[in-house]
Length: 228
Picture 1: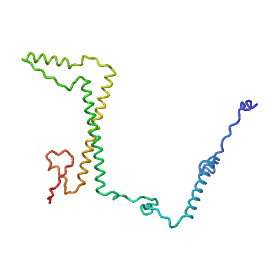
Picture 2 (picture 1 turned 90 degrees about the vertical axis):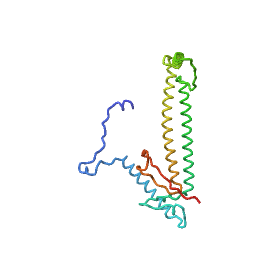
Picture 3 (picture 1 turned 120 degrees about the horizontal axis):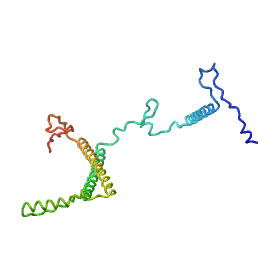
Picture 4 (picture 1 turned 90 degrees about the horizontal axis):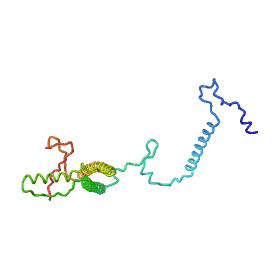
């Protein structure tokens, strides 16, 4: 019986729209819209009630370090600027540790580049060992040179696809490591310069006309101080 009831077409009940005389008030609010608005309103009222209770039962002698370490800007609490949090000696120590870490990573990248270059040379047939041959005359020297070229020529040797793919990947890795080592070297140079500039002593930046080969980089000169 229920299936027969569902098989009979029913009229579609349309929602009532806003009357023409009230079009200026926008869309007509439905019950689900009212539920959302009512829940939001009651949530705000509960929050205000809790805040009023906290303000009523607050201890007037309560103290918090944030009261003196922060200030109110446009109604919001902002922490005070911690410009002098560290002394000059502490900043120098932290800068030295950072420079040491960068230098260590730079040396590590250089060692990996050397190992990878040596392995690719051996794979490509370019041995790092050098053999010295002594010839009696020019003809014998020419024959020895031709023999050495034929031994070192691997163009005729067919390299398997998997090995060639690994070699291409290694070459891409080598280029990436060279770029990374170059960036680390530049970073180490800049950090070393900043560390030296933090030290005591009179110094000045040289102009371009005072340099023999100006390359756009800043060059400083320290004045000689008289030692006691």
